[in-house]
Length: 133
Image (tube, rainbow, N blue to C red; front, top):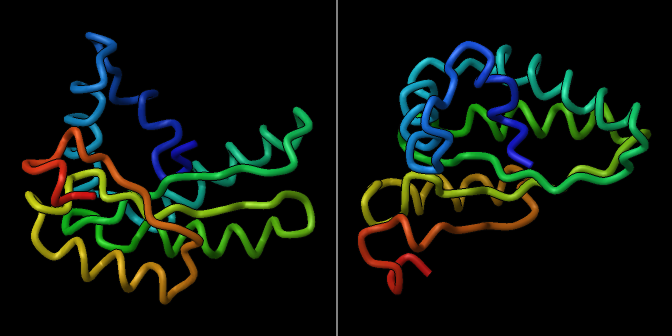
């Protein structure tokens, strides 16, 4: 899942239905993300998942110079809040790329120090997929 971005399609629809448009919409929305907003939407999603019998979720959370660590901070709090009802594994995800978004490496390192469980990647969307990996 991408718990840091749940429910954004409600007020910012992806007209084409493509991944590229979804990424562009998210990039724009992340400029104004707040921890409170991310927590509210993710909490709603977690409650829905639990109600349907979900016991464990792995979520990517965007870590980049646009949004910084806002999503991570929100999800770390929610992991604690929901710990007795659901296992939540958090993957620090460089959505904007590592090579084309300077400062991301440092943010990923900080994310791990704060409690992210793993680091993900999206090499096909970065300037140099091999260096990204």
